[in-house]
Amino acid sequence: MIGFKFTVCQNLIIRSVGTLQGDSGALFAAGVVGQSYQQFFPLYLEGGDDAVQTVLRENCPLFLRGHQTTCFCGKIQADISINPLHEVGGTVIGAEIILKSCSGCGLSGSGSKERQLIEIGKSSAALAHGVRNPLNAIKGAVVYLKDTYGKESTLIEFAEIIEEEISKLDGFVTRFLSTSLLESKFATLDVNEMLHRILAVSKFQAYEKKVSFVTEFDPIPLVPADVFQLEHAVMNVVNNALEAMAEGGEIRLKTETARRERCDFVCISISDSGGGMVQEVPCETPDSPDGREPEKGRGFGLFLTREIVQLHKGLFEIVSRKNLGTSVAIYLPVVSI
Image (tube, rainbow, N blue to C red):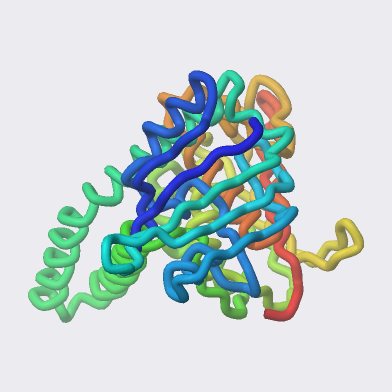
């Protein structure tokens, strides 16, 4: 693909996409109009700020020569022009973004991966809208139970866990609908403490399936992370492990420090004793990330986990063999924020 362009309004919603060639290009254009550009395109950063937002705010064109960015095919080099759009009278109403010299980008190819990503984006937006009302109903029911049965200490403990998880999910939905997942809030995180919280929430499902958790948490340094997103990513892996288990068995969670690619990492290992997969899964998550059929619903979770780990500049590895279980390793860099 030689280049393409798209326009956004003041709220960063895509209004048009042009000059994409081929079947996948037409599908891509149709699928992203009306969505936040940050859900489908990487942030174009200039001086640490989103360049598109800078142009909208300052009403000044911006040109990024040889800018390293990403597309669905990987990292590419592109010349990016961002120009403000004006209505009659000079008021800024949006921006036009033009990418040129995108050699190596395969959006004009078969488009199977692009189709999947577009469908994921559309489905997840609909899901986010659909869960808000049930969340409010559940939260109201929990408050009623606490007020009515306030003397039951066990019920109060579980109700507080439910309330906390509902608040997290409600905050996630709000952020998902109003901004981009790439707008992360990083803070120092105690990974071992995060895993204890995840185990507290997951113990009910594990108890039902007669699955036990075995933990081995080494003393590890704090890491910079978006706490909610990373917790969501690890929870996806734990839930997948629980779903893979027949009645009985164990899930092992381990933390340790590791050195990879001349950098220090905190490693989270999650292994199950389930049936595994037909063949070994490579480190690069495929279109159906765990090799199972899409209708079983386990591809999207691992896809999101991989994206969140990559957002944290980490590494995500899966090793799985039939009848030998599955092991997932998440490597988080130990660096200063």
